[in-house]
Image 1 (tube, rainbow, N blue to C red):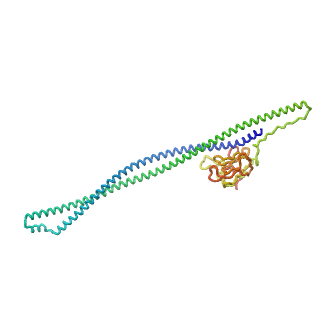
Image 2: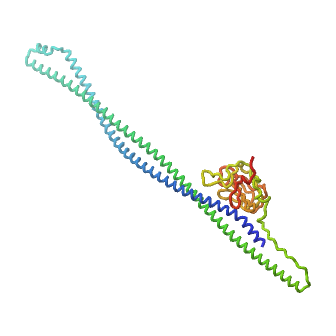
Image 3: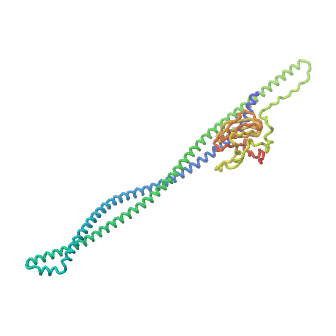
Length: 432
């Protein structure tokens, strides 16, 4: 009978803690599901933007390909032009050599003409005795003069051709330089655009990858939270069944005891009927005592505003403030900054109903103070108590740490009243 009552009392003690944990887990699960939906929506937008950039990059690289083809064709033209330039340069050198030779011949003829003077015809006429020889000499002289004129004409033509060749070479070089400069400019511009789009595409790819990783982490968190919630619900259902079974057993035991007491009273009455008259015996009904009514350090409800803080430190987060960048979640307790390894003290006497690691809270201690009041101490470095231990007010129950994913050592401290979060600042003494 006593064991049944003790089991029933422990079930009643643990029921609020598991119900509170289930509510917290459900809240985290809902927030995670919403995050997953938002991440999927954002991923869709990023994928659309990435597709657009890829399409633009495709167009740019296609244009780059066409331009490279034009550059390649121009390079071939440049090679042809260079060959033509080499040919023209060779012709230029030949013309220059011919010009030099013609200048030499003209100079010789000019000197000869100067030496003979202006009376050549008269000298030839006076010096010749034979008319036939004179005629031949005159003819030779005409041929020589005509040769001089032809050489001069050829020299002038050579100079003209040389000037034309030099002009053609300069024009060809200028045109090729303009085309090459234009293509180089276009290629540089397209290459710049391609690099910019490749950078945008790389950034988008990194963003998509980061979002994919975050989405995978969120989905894993959702799976883990679902498992925790399922375990809590199964535990609560089992506790409800066990509580009902214990209540039925206690009721049956009480009925059996009552029947036994009635039988014994009837037997005593029957015995008294056969014996001498005796004084009547008054029966005192038995009183049932439950350990759930046991309190430690006085009733918790009357200690509002009088409790000490569990650790000395500075408040990093207050009750009801937004948690991080997520405006949907609020702090249901406080965060107290303290040195790693600092002693954490129970703010009120009670019984340890949970002392283990829990997702989001790290190493966590939960104290039951009776009448539906719980105090929670999370992110500890070490746990000094175990489930079932009875602690007094001010007794050390853990040490400050950063378990559960915290960046710096700090204590998570919360108070639950009938399963609902309550501001610890309203229960603890005001700080100076």
